[in-house]
Length: 437
Image (cartoon, rainbow, N blue to C red):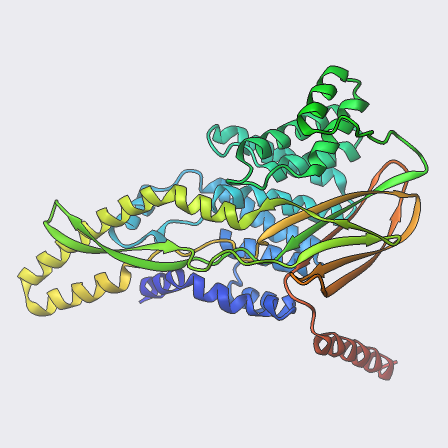
């Protein structure tokens, strides 16, 4: 019975994710976090740890987010050697019995979000460590996709803020190369930002020949990168926009020459098309700056599934043959045994619909050079008609020759009712406290 419960839980992960994400779609991440915390109190598995880590981050618990992300990270490391028992179970029962270690883009984004948590905590050294670990992982894989454009871009920004200009230049080069080679496929087309950052860093490093070559390639021969100036600093805005797609299940009948029968196999799919997102822009000092897409998680997820599909179908077909043979054997032993085995095979033939569903659909970024001092910042979410559907307001202090960060998640406007409820709750807590004094 316990095994059946596990199978049903794993097989219906897409349904669980849809329920859990309802709070996010209503602008109330705390509700989604509560659902996820109750669903997995043990904090031992990769996927629940990833979901809780992101939800804690969305509720501004950056320390708690990294604590549970660390659980996921260590478990992923343990799972690099998949057991023979799990592989056998995936062939005889279904793929949900394989421990979930995350797709490659998910494993890399784990490091990215831990780095963002460290940035929000003012611990840039911790962010640097995460980038180093992600870099090691990309080198270890050694095959496609061995580089992630956004990871390299974020890495460059972190290095630059630590005064490691040579390392920042290397990271910007790598980021641009990935955007150039895989833009429009796995990644967005190279943003204008990375081109200007690469040129700016080449100028700082005094690499004139390479600067001129890239400036010509980019069509930016007239661009004049700003130099160091103690009167200016930088604002880096990172927006996690929307939600990654949720996997569903489909099935088909495939003819097996081994048993001369049409056999039913189940496999994961992304049924819904990519959603059209609201367009974000940043407004500072009465100037508006369009944000650029630096990571397309939706596209990465679909690409990853497409790449994995041949092996998924091989395992599914092999599994269907095994189940057919066991069913045939059971039927020879009696009608009841055959019936029970037929039901068991139908129930257990489920697709693995697990994925990190609290990731954004896209990650957008903007870097703005601003005078030193305090500034009011607005991130405006614009619909297709050009009207603002929501505004995120922040105040930031710009310091000389360094970056100040605003990192936000946007899925839906926060309901005014929810905000009012929070204020009432806080007021009640204060009154209760006063009554005890």
